[in-house]
Length: 79
Image (cartoon, rainbow, N blue to C red):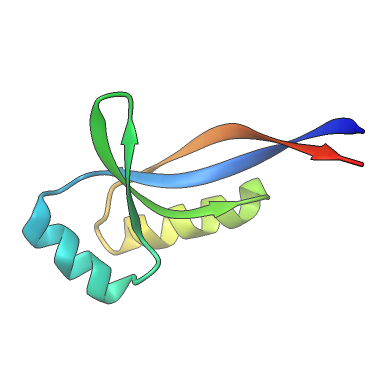
């Protein structure tokens, strides 16, 4: 077996409060609340390419939804 690491690009925004979150959830059913450290955030998606993440980020910015891209590693054990 070997470990394979992959970069994952997460499109994130600050948690705007429950009322705004519920409105966003209607518009974007895939969003998830996530904890980063001790802060609540909203994840709009996780992508395997930077291009996809940037496209989502730009679309959200065009809708007035400030966001940023967080990059993480995902490791899988492969046999």
